[in-house]
Amino acid sequence: MFCLVYTSVANTDFSLKEIQEMLGKAREFNNQNSITGCLLFFKERFIQYIEGEEIVVRELFERIKNDNRHSEVVLISENRIHNREFLIWHMAFEHLKSENSDLQYLKLLVSTFFESPENSLSPNPTSLEFWNATKLLLSTKYANKSA
Image: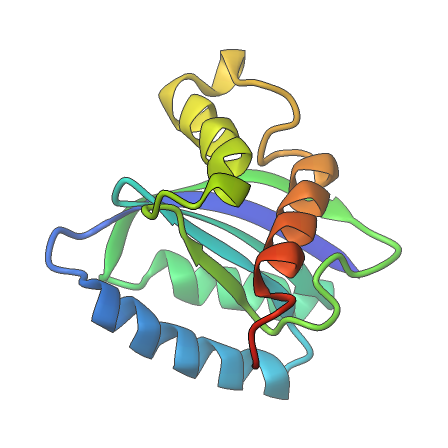
């Protein structure tokens, strides 16, 4: 099992509606290719954690890098892992725009990482601890909502 994390900048004409359409297609592809992960969107920037078989994840990342809906794609970490972090999500997603108090911690971590990666708060998106916290916060947020 393998995971990678990258960041990118959304193109100015990439609307939230287009993100939702992209997510639908991504989830279908991920389901067919045993990929799971999480996509966060904050202040016109993406940060994504992808996990699955290494060859499949790397091939997907090559496609992502060539997607014209975003730019400045930067790989920030990659690792071999023993277990999936997002086992039940073909692509969890959160737009960190809302004033949801449950997600303020996550927004703070992402914000400091984007502003100054070398001095960002810990945990940060390069660590599994960050993604574990993300998973927990999203699970809590959506626990009472129907899928």
